[in-house]
Length: 319
Image 1: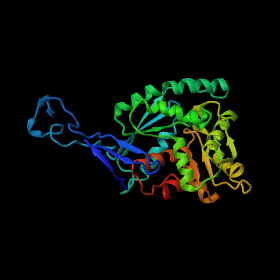
Image 2: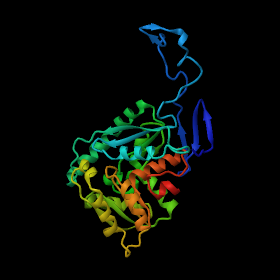
Image 3: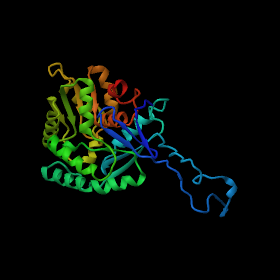
Image 4: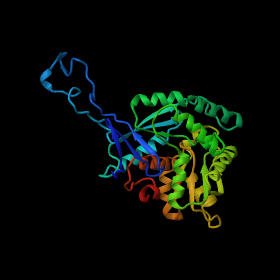
């Protein structure tokens, strides 16, 4: 793993994020006694066996057996079946030295009991449920002692304009003292790294959702040349949009010679784009920036995982 300079205090570390340039605080989660044992210590057939040796009583703090390199907290709507799978896929494809061995996810769902978003009223109900459940979900996620948080929703689907999105995230960030990876910060960093100024966007949404997405990207300073959406009426159904439809939309509606795009940008964390990205980028010759891969790229780079990574397209492989 590449390293970033920083300071340490009582096991806690702070470094400067590779993309944001802001301080990133990494809480210590292995501080002794870890694991803490009861006064009985190790028992055998119900009896204490002092000779076994100390686990939680010595000066060493033992790491999480699986998430020893970093423990990420991930918040997603309860209807989302794609994002966690995408992130684990990237983790499992990069178990080599310098990769993501020891990186783990702790996923917490935000209750979204009314997933119908085919009308403005339905979208407003979904928005109210998700935003209203964020505080409780964040506090639930903190029970696993994550070291960094990832927001697993395209906030531009439910909020129009970058200022309301940033204001909402300021509220969310007040629920805990951890750093967050968000889609709007991640895609802005990707645009800068890749020199992107003209994009086509692909979503699972209807006209209102697409218009909000266009506004956010324009607020970020890029030109949205063209957009396409699948108009899913139920947010759970977004995960069922087939790969051929994503590829057809990307090739025939967005990445046409006349549009002269610098990149295709996909919104909607429940619409996996990993396989499509890997297939299409060599064909169209421009990056395909799917929200799940790009947001995870941002989280990883901010946390000091700086080596090339497979499974997420050119951005993770070369930047």
